[in-house]
Image (cartoon, rainbow, N blue to C red):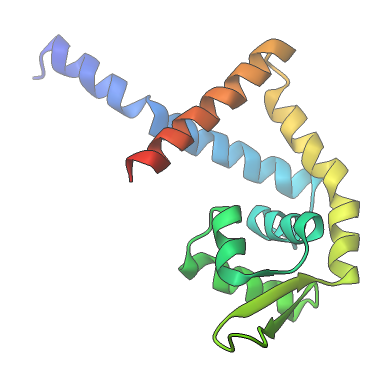
Length: 151
């Protein structure tokens, strides 16, 4: 039989940030499928959005800006390439470097889906008053920034 102290610790451990972040991810995934698109994932939309906003960039920079590691960005790009939403070319100055650009159909996807992506955000944050929404998002950014600096 565990002591109350141990029980409290276990309860805190299983109901903490990991558990809550998993539940947030589940909610986001469900709302994404309902409101956005079943064929474009969140990471794919982020990649398309970055290319739409910033233009052509190399695969490494794109992965960094999207917070996707090398093993994740490659299959994301392959799926977008298969759907002709991006183009990948070799850099003329460094043939090892892949340059990625959004195509016109990719831009259309970004324009068409942006309102729905914003609706997902709004639905997720709806229980919070406006001021709390900004503080919540700023707090998440601080947590993520702090974890990045610690690496």
